[in-house]
Length: 319
Length: 271
Image (cartoon, rainbow over all chains, first blue to last red; front, side):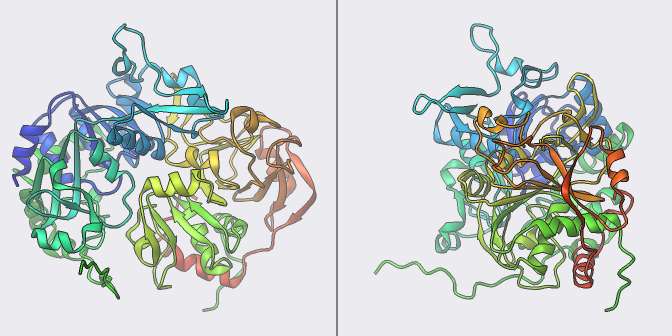
């Protein structure tokens, strides 16, 4: 257990590759990375979300490997940086990024999928466009490795595509609950989360609730990575606000309009960061400020009130 | 509730025409945006036993309440209400789609070309982009492996290209034999439902024979053949069996408006 501040200070370094997931986003850790001025991160995820847009404004993130820029392109500053090369990237897909993380997690050098057969992803001008991540793909002899490669299968001669393993330096994620050892429990559609955590060297988790080990142990099927894989667990209620958390709260659709977080202009983006990120000490401070400014009801109304209760809970037993 | 059946928009007709392509009992992978609405309409209307799956992991969504609107995103929390399985992307796109268990896909795209290839990457080129788009998401993964693709987009000249500015998702590639040459299995019968009509593709066997070109099959009520032809920038093939599609039924329109209550899908001004 530690604070988000301590976790980022200890485990996130300039230039790291960072996994920040597809659907359970730790805005608490995102904001802390921005506050601490970490620079030059490479964000990898099946889809990158508005938290990556936020991290791009002051150069916390300047490289991306993803399948989908989810909402990110609404930001004119982000589009501008993709054009002039301040942000560099290579395009993949939701599944191939997830499989690349899986390969990293399984200790494989690469993984096979057929997603790009017959498409323009295979053109030289796509793989090595002028803002692509060629520098990151430099081999020891100075030549540039491709971002993926077509081979003839040695087994049946058919065409197949190989994608290199991804092994991020650090993962950030929010979860429903964890215990003090860092056993992380997540439910709901998990997208790329499990493999993002298994493949990353250091895993930083904010948890909506900290529960005793006994709670974890009665429902071990919800644990997506065990405690020894986790470097930091942080208790952070509303840790994924303004995005949602299944069973706890819905995404806050008022947020961007109320705070100006649409990031459509440089001025607007800087104003948002100054007021809501640099202008708050931590996530609790951010939530307190949000409540003070817009009223308690706004967040309360997002809470899920009608939760499903298991009709017949899973039973474990041993004698 | 009684509604005026003469008053519906072309965007609503697009959603309904897309939904009508979805068959009861089939397994379907549903993409972001209007496809979520079309597939939900199909499920509520004529395909209750369709397996409604999205790529972030919900497998076989059966909403237990008809009060809920259609899911807004592929990880919408409402997809866990009544789902048989709450898996992840390796389950959904990996095992379900690439493992060969998805019989159809409903996908949106920014562009489609003469041979049914989809583009969700960019308009222009990487070096001189007119507009950068979000990227493929799971469309490329799906297009490579699914048995049949139902695509949907408004009929506009900038969206219908002789060759897509960027092929993110393989259709019939350059024509007959294109899929086999690329290393992909046959696919079809593919359809593209628009705001004016529904297109099919000229191939009986999923891309080996026939011209594999887009063919106009159904016109919406009140739309002329000429209106469609002048929007398409190449010489469009027209089916010998060209017919008009039935207008929306009251049940379809009432369901659709309930499912999109709030206009999260058919965003006013965009469609």
